[in-house]
Amino acid sequence: MTPEVRVKICGLTRPEDVSAAAEAGAAYAGFVFFPKSPRNVTIETARDLAVDVPVGVAKVALVVNADDALLDAITGAVPIDIVQLHGAETPERVAEIRARTGLPVMKAVGVADAEDVAALDLYEEVADQILVDAKPPKNAELPGGNGVAFDWRLISARRWSKPWMLAGGLIPDNVAEAIALTGAKQVDVSSGVEASPGIKDAGLVRDFIEATRVPVRL
Image (cartoon, rainbow, N blue to C red; front, side):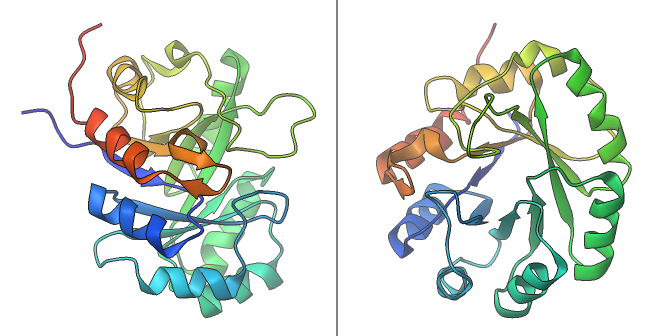
């Protein structure tokens, strides 16, 4: 039997999107705290949405180079389970945030070529999980959620010391191939299941999660 792949639906902004993710079987629900993103939510909105996340689904706060004041405000008001760092945080900053919040930390690392893969080693030493994303295009406003994939072969033979998650350009039509090629046990999607930026499509969410359950032979 194929082991179940854990799916994170990120960039949730509406109660119906939270429900769609949970009903489809998502393991993680992600909320974005980054004003430049079309998926940005206020702390008040995130708090209301998080209350509706079923027990057993991990609530993730995505922040980008957040200062201590923002981290304190989020964790003080929203029942978050994991902090996702999606900026240029150094390994030292990752360790600081992990100690300050008392929560598990997931560090996103952008990959475009073999040189970028080396950074994974540094962050595996300090983070609880690694999110491997496509490095954003030059001049991109967003550090993630750009719908861009990277060459999955760059990590296909990697040995991991921490749990990790694959992101970047995943959609219902390619996620099974990505899993087969990388061996990912966890995947993250945001723009790939949207009707428009920040608005999830319940059918695409369902199709995406169902596609992770289908084994593919390369």
